[in-house]
Image (cartoon, rainbow, N blue to C red; front, side, top):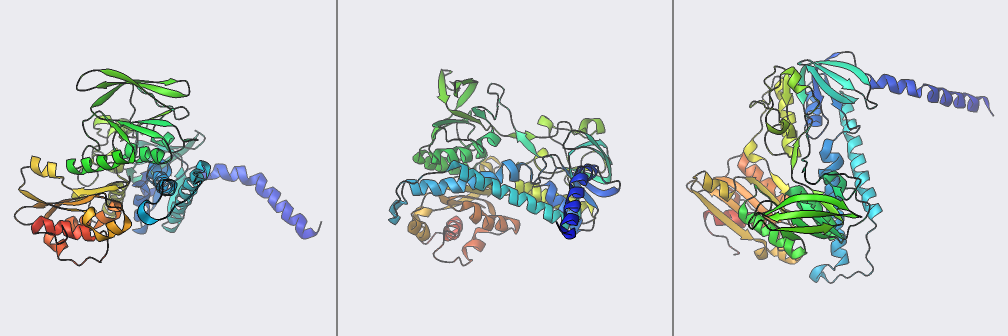
Length: 499
């Protein structure tokens, strides 16, 4: 062996010998005082940290998962969208592409490849955030943070050992949320009763699935497994799906999902759930009659919402005022009642949405740096990524009615839209709710294959106080799905052209 080869081998050996020591050193926290420490590296926390770094603040982010991006990126928004898109492509291929004249034989889904794609997407994006942290000079600390005073965070490393205490002038709580439990149906993601995390990682396609809860998560993940071959039944306590959505829009979505094969049991309470053999059994009860029946399925998905994740943060000991279900109470500038302690995202009031958390994260960083941070909560869009998608922003017709507002409604169906007809994808409608006297946009609601993209125009209109006429007099390219948006705006103040 040459001298160079020996020297190279020796260097590698030294590297291996000292690697554990180096790892231990990196797991201890930096001995400095920061302008801001963010506890939680999810879609609220990591943008807050990056923005603070961009504004010249010294900032650190403490994240317990071992990967940045929070629930959204790791076991929520991103992996579910990967599965939704892949399963939609599979369903079209397996059952024919409608009237397009395309047929394929022996179409099969390789579930392991689908899951591999999902994992690769998540890994690529989480590592990308680490690169953004370096660019913004954010210190990334892996471990669980506990607030021990208004200016200190104690960190427990990934091995459960005390890594030391960090100091900061400001602490931002951005710990997100976790799936809400349903006591009669205990979740065990290694078994047949799962929550959203477990439903993203099933090892095989179940023959049957019961989804408890007809909200966003249940309908999206139920759609994934129905497309892949499962018989899906959704059990909902209320007498409608998607509570909070405009009633007319919710009914439109339910019709589409029912047509696709999804079954619904509304006004139904889950009394009990248990594992039975390789599957599970539920006892459900009608809210109307009180009659009970037993349902069986290979997999039960419990998706009844989410609750703030604030347990073990030490907030009560520091004196942070808490609300129901562990929610942190904040003022209009996202400050808690303890000076220097702030909170954003799912752990405070408001819709549990990644983009809402991001807006709050940027706003809190701006406020801490001496600028004016602001979030317009009336212009936060909400999207359900089924097919068709549903997107909404602003007031529903129900809310306008409840508030005694004099309003007008303008609607336009995609059945009358030329691009939707060409695509053979005509399920859905655009609905405007406007102020009767001025035409000012109060809310926009869309059911369409690309509703999640199209809603941005409605958000922009609300943000700038536009009227329906402003939208209607704006030229939209032809032929596009967005022309339905223009025509619905026309219907709100005058008459549409094509319907």
